[in-house]
Image 1 (cartoon, rainbow, N blue to C red):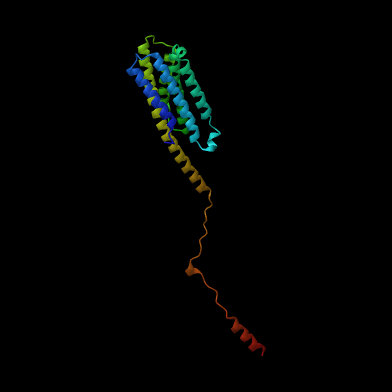
Image 2 (image 1 turned 180 degrees about the vertical axis):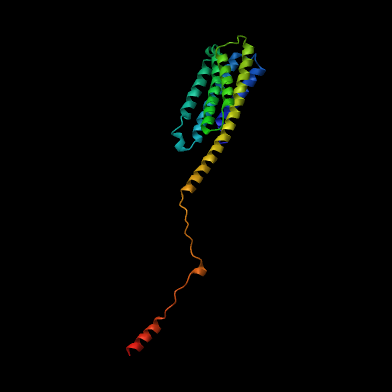
Length: 226
């Protein structure tokens, strides 16, 4: 689970749950939607903060998830406290959520290209559809509120499902890339090691030097001198 962006999975489930509610209950009161939106925003902020503490101490220096999480929580609190004003901009808030999902998939698309795994055509299509849904929601093209909420609900479900699949797919590709790089490094290291062509002589080919008895040599020298 650590290899998969589990924070993205939690956020995807929040998108799917909120979208399903809007599709099943398009007549829901806008105040309730604002409260749910505030709760979802605060939850996403908490997930970002928790994600910060899952990283190793070396990786934390390169991350800003803690600050980002705090800002998201503050945004959620503002939505809750000023829900009467947010109602007038509810389509903008919901559209922003859909756009963020599209931008997340755009980043995943760039990661796939960086990993070198074929054409990102499918990702491009998913991103364009996601961004298109977000733009339509923000521009308030659909005037009928219930129809708008159904459209937003479908968009959130689409965003959540595609984000979930994208996170799993990208996690698999990252593991595959890591294994491939490790194998290439091992092969490169082996190719740089010198090849030892010297062979030790076999035991039967080794001729042992005769052992000389020093006492015999001394006796012969004494005999000669005498």
